[in-house]
Length: 304
Ligand code: ATP
Image (cartoon, rainbow, N blue to C red):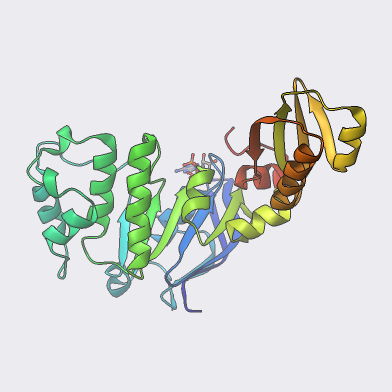
């Protein structure tokens, strides 16, 4: 598989403080790669080094198979789309004017109409930026990052602070970018975002990569068991409980089964309830997620 980004032993010092302690990551062509970690882990530092906005202190990295020494060569920059976490637009410009402004920075740019369509802002093209909602502004930022028709797009926390509906529309937009064959490097601390979008993730903590793989691989390896919580309308007899033959426990007024095979255990539970004529109620499934992976690996919660 062709690698668009390769990072080896990357280090970054801010004065005496070492923010990156020799990290290794790679990103394959056409994938959404998620860079996950708690606040201060080193995500933005890494991203800004790769974008050419910061200098690294040690190690090295390759973009499109080119070793990057000091400055990013122009031909590499032209293949990259960058959206910055804090970037703000000039409020008294209209959406279309913003896109025209950014397009003017590049020799080759996508058509404004196409960008408006991709970022679902066709109806907002004549609106002043200050009147856009938070979600629409984020979509405009992604639209701006697409202006040079990039092969590789960097997205730094693209949905932070958005409501679920706006988040959903950004996720769809990002998935569409992958559909078009683009490669996406995304930082996030939303685990559901990583699980929904990412083909592979790397987890960074205190400047070190602690694991990498597909979300599914990591969850299977470190996520632990799933839980089935349920209530019984009629209290089952001790004998019946024993027959369930699972790791079952009583938690307050409901039962909890821990299992490594959710489907099989659910089937067993339903058969069991039929056999003993027990009416099950309020069945609640909890599957392990990337939060659990992080907790297993570090003993800490991702969101501190
Ligand atoms: P967040 O999720 O909060 O954005 P992050 O994972 O992106 O966090 P970075 O912004 O890369 O983390 O910061 C990594 C570490 O480096 C933090 O401890 C931060 O305080 C420190 N740091 C970042 N920029 C500088 C700087 N310019 N000078 C000194 N220390 C810095």
